[in-house]
Length: 154
Image 1: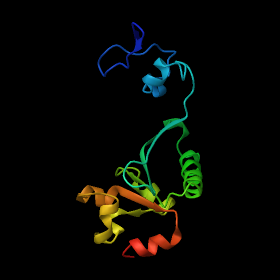
Image 2: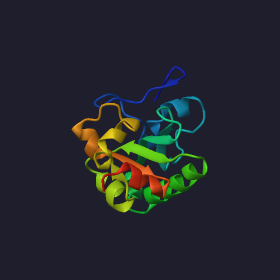
Image 3: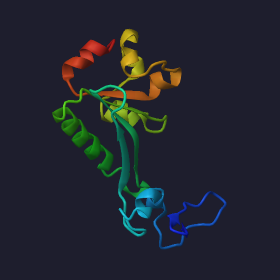
């Protein structure tokens, strides 16, 4: 929906998007408003990457894909390519805060460690004051295989 020249994403209970507008990518209203994507483009996923904590740490702040594309290897392929490319760019760690619904994907499928697996004296490199929540759901992908032995208690 547009209001003047600004796209407004409807709130729950408020006015809804027209039927021909893809609600999944309408969440990227700034990109639509700037003309980077169109209202009816088919967006597969969205990813937010940050590198503001440590020069060797790449943080995945957000990864979302379409419900209908889940289970088809899209996320596995993305994270595999991210692992390879981030390593080539000089990063040592890929991290992210996950949720209870997807933590098994990161732990079991991607073989990531949780912050709770990290030696207590090394956790500050990833989180300043980790909560119990962080210890269970914050994951680390070690791009240098030797780092896993150095950083983890396992």
